[in-house]
Structure formats: structure tokens, C-alpha cells
Image (cartoon, rainbow, N blue to C red; front, side, top):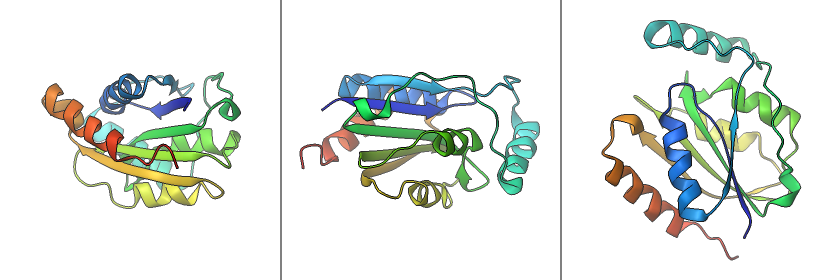
Length: 161
């Protein structure tokens, strides 16, 4: 099964999880990047990111060469901002049609995932969501523990039906 891991990561947690998923599934990996590459942390990130979510902004993205049709399984990953998927992933989905695919979802957060995965699923009509997982404080987790959690999740995915 040809697999693509497509993710957005601002501070590295989602990137860390995506790399482990890539290795577990021998997948191709694609990082979504915004044209605004300013690194924000702490309160400035919360205000900026939360403001984007509340205002429904879809940031401009750097070009990403991925042919979704070439993949059987698409795994999407995002940090959680204001109980929602990061606007960069929403922007990607608004300009890249994903239909008729098996899809798996992951999110990374420091507190709670809120409705992030449900909101993401709502953007993926016409697909079969075969699994979802969230990681709390992934960047602070022991790498072995994170790898184990991801490995168990990958094994739980219904990849052959």
C-alpha cells in the first residue's frame, strides 16, 4: 500500500511524530510550510494561531509537489490550535482534493485536542478514515515511548480492507 504522510508542524512535535510514522510504514513524507516562516512560541504563538483559527484564515503555502492520486493511504498530521487543526493544514486541504482514499489522522497538543480531529474529518468527506490518534506533549515524550505508541497505532490501522 503506497502511503503519504502529509503534515504541518510549527514547533516540531508533529514533525517528530510524522517521521516515526513514515519509518513505520515506509511512507513518502511531505511537510506543509506557510509563506510566513516566522517562528513564534508561547503566548505570541497562541494569539497568532488562535486568531487565525477564529478568523477562519487560510495562510498562503509554499508549493508542495504531491500527487494525492498516487497514494492508497494518506496520513494527515497537525498541531492543535484553539481546539482545531492548524490553519495551514486546512489551507492545504482547501486547495488539494482528497477523495476516495483511506485516511488516517494524528494531532499533537500540549493540553487537549478539543474538536481538532472531528473538524479535520469534516473536511474529508468522500474518504474512509481508518484511524486517528492524538499525542499530548509529543516533543517532551521519551522517544522510545512515542515510537511504541505510534507502532501500536500503525498496527491497529485496517490497512488491507
